[in-house]
Image (cartoon, rainbow, N blue to C red; front, side, top):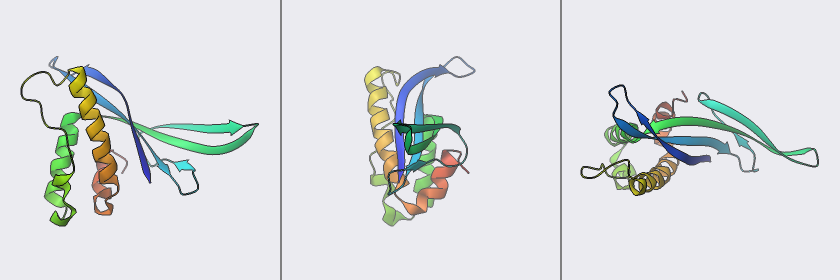
Length: 139
């Protein structure tokens, strides 16, 4: 199973000075025996959990940053290319903010929660794997 953690969203600015939120994603792969491994690409952190000098598990974590707009484009790509019986459109996805600030704390927190649940759901769909790995730049 792929494991995703969304950590500390940050505000950044584009070249025109417009502010946007960057969602930091940490991904690892958990095996049935409780060990973790990562995938290709991204920033890699290898950590080991030790007890009395004995390695219990090794974890490789891939870190990547994505904007909300990148998630929206990825979702649109899936809607175009995935078979309708997979019902991608029915998976809850945060709406675009037309009025108010997309940088507001409550909006950012709500989006982060929904985006994490959404990507975990997408990761369970085998047909979506190549698209997901491209989105995460792991291919």
